[in-house]
Amino acid sequence: MCAVRTPAMAAISFASHSVLRRTLHSFVTPRPLVITSNKLSHYTTLISLPLSSSAAGTCHLPQAIKGDVDSLLGGVRDKGAIEAVKHIIELARRASSRREVLHTDFLTPPILNESIIVLGKLADIKAVAQGGYPQIKYLLSLRWRCRLSVGHPQAFTTDPDIVAALSITGNFGFHPCSHGDFLGTILGTGIAREKLGDIILQGERGAQVLIVPELVDFITAALDKVGNVPVTCKKIPLVAVEYEPPRTKSFKTVEASLRVDAIASAGFRISRTKLVDLISNGDVRVNWTTVTKSNTTIKNGDIISVSGKGRLKIGEINSTKKGKFAVELIQYL
Image 1 (cartoon, rainbow, N blue to C red):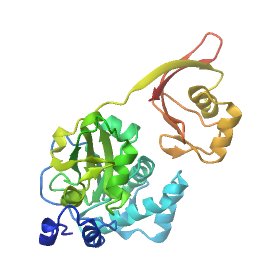
Image 2 (image 1 turned 45 degrees about the vertical axis):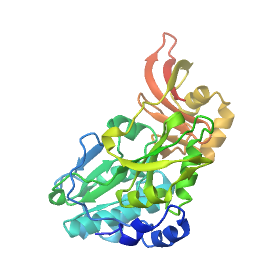
Image 3 (image 1 turned 180 degrees about the vertical axis):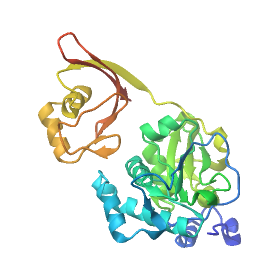
């Protein structure tokens, strides 16, 4: 187990940030933690992925050789996620062979998506994803970060308790702060970005933050101001997180095909030539996976994201009398 609460830390004043940063360096480096026995709130998002050892085409991970791992990584469509997925495979191998449960830090949606696909091909592994939200659909289809617990199925004797929530409150009525202001202030204490989940803005009141539990005491002691606004930071139960569904706007387009370049061009209101250039530069993703071909076909429920432009969800698709496609596009604001 990784011990993060030290007697010295509790006695340090809010102003002693430099001392806290030096103390922090001993545990901010990303590393897995053995599961605790604390029971998780039923409001927390959990994705359980028990994987059968008898499934065809699976790899028994504890005995996997390098060729097996290379083969698994070869199926990763988002090449920018390969190193992270490789680390998670190694984490799963160690956890399964030792009959224990290990945890990642917060993963971005592309890495989470690719990791779940790879872990689905492995035998003797169970994976649980947790992001701190009550509705699983938003975790998978939007932009939420989450942590992944992996291990042998028999090692999961309790639900992983690996996400904590903080409330940062202050009078932001005259000095509103953005998501970037809160993020920058928290990272300014010296912690790694991977230790943070989502930041939920609450307007004049402040924000709520999802974080790894072992850094709760540190952040509550270190954080006393965001921008020019004095703040109070305290731990809250996950059930108190004020989740809000994203704001959206729906509209329809009629296209001759369901190619991603055609649909995204209409959805983001940019020329098709520009959209093709964005695809060539690796700036277009479908369901968090980088698209490499302009003729990739989309379907109902797909999420298209373009760097710097935002995200679209594909709604209903209907054929017209003229053989075209009427596509509902849902834009996240």
